[in-house]
Amino acid sequence: MNQDRRESLEDLLEAIWLRQEAGKPFDPARYQSSGEGISVPDLLGELDRQRLVEVSDGVAKLTLTGQDRAAQIVRRHRLAERLFYDLLQTGTEDSTSLACRFEHILNEEVTEAVCTLLGHPPTCPHGREIPLGACCRRAEREVKPLVRPLSECAPGSRVRILFITPRFHERLDRLNSFGILPGAVVHLHQKQPAFVIRIDASEVAIEKEIAHEIFVIKIE
Image (cartoon, rainbow, N blue to C red; front, side, top):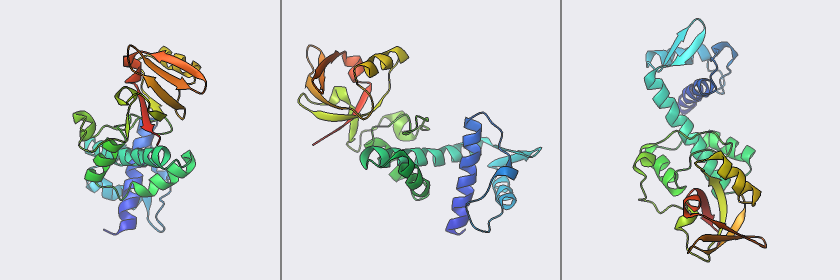
């Protein structure tokens, strides 16, 4: 199978998965393949033969095997977005464009390494959930993560907040009111008896549990 056709099949699986994620049906008649001269009905037929997709009454649905395969593609795409956006600091539009190409060249081993490196992020830069991988379930730290909870940083560290995973929405609102939000640069002043961080000219005390929910990258 040539590269263009393989990528077109993956793009179609991803498109069906995204529609199902949004709770909407996938209409093949409204989908345009990105591969020049590649027929969508032909692609669907091949996915059907592989038992990844079922088409009924003009609507395409993923089989259980198809859902697993598509989730892996979406996972690669959203991790690639996170990589470009957080570490290379590209804009969201560029991150998405680059990720569309990058997702097709990541194998499983590299994908898990990227995920571990980023600290197993739960969402992409747009706030959409990243499907879990084996490394997330095992919470591996075989590759030293560049992204880590604030609670694991040493006093004196200067860090940039990448994402926050609060247990309660009210907690996120409170943090935002202090300027503790993705993109903010903070200085960890102390960890005992409470975590104290500096934002601009202000100091904010937070609990250890909250510090564990704030994921950051160190700024040299």
